[in-house]
Picture (cartoon, rainbow, N blue to C red):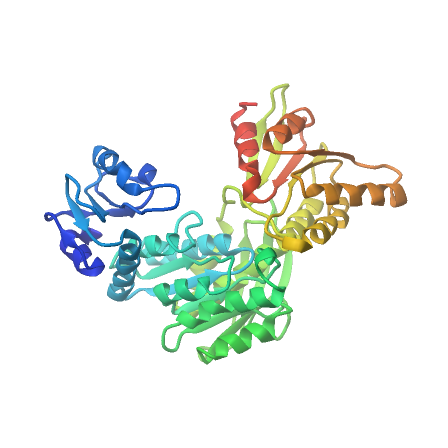
Length: 473
């Protein structure tokens, strides 16, 4: 196999000086991810300095390091390691003939990125590349680009932001041939003046489009016209997806699939190659996943990919950790329960979608909802947390455990609704953090129950998931 990078190519790309000749098969900036043959970027942050771990890198089998001060061992010496990572990303993009797809959105971007990778990788026989985990920020994106093999056919990159201007910088590194916006929601609204401002910030992804690139946007969004106008400043090719009959890629029919998920009939409007119709299964449940799948089909078609292979890949998807993965957990007092892990993040739109999905779940026991607060909502936090109450009740949860300070507003609204509307009220409790949440839910869950765990990542509800799945609680 060809090396990912040679020391001479790295030195040229990052404007540095190589201490010796070497080759690398991977790139990392987290010392815990280093494996044999990898290149390590010693980044300097506010609370850490990668130079302190250089000896550990060599001990773990790392081949070389990029540093801003000389070290003993194979290295590339540069003036600024963070800028050097950007330079290597630019060089990686420049040497690649792959079709590049950028994905952003307030919700659904990681799942869409993963599903799109599966769709394209299936047909390209392993010659597709994507950003791993949620490496979607100012260091994650260039790292993901730097890891892209020169010979791959497709590259899929997730791009995130919580301030205006961030996506503009990332998309100019990625230079996507296709840019997708999955959805617009009030995520990070605490950093913006309005949801319209969030839509404008997401639309920055179009600024990096290559010549004759394609923008893919949600037709059903209230911000469709705003996104479309933004896209047309950078490309003439705008493809829409959604459930409306005017969408270019639309869901004609959606019915529940055996065993969960959805059976979808989609129509793809003529793009010069004729109209297409595709019937396929999505393993993941929920209307939001149907929407994601439509965006995926639009992207696959835009890069000349295999739509049939994409349909097969969507049918084989499994949930991602923290984003819908399902676990059958063994209970200490006997029996099993289903745990739905949505612990990675939460905003008002994803909360509504997930609670709606819980309403459709059927179980032999009870439905338990462990719901954490939503972060970065600014002065609208109270209103958005109060707004969860109706969807919580509609979910059919009989036991509700609320986590985090801002859930006090949800708790109060739930109490108000109980007093006015319900004869048989659910059991509701409110705890401070993940440790208390684990203790609370461990005493509530029993055989054949369904437990949904969702909340913003800062609350650490993934620890609750891990403890319940491992049985260490």
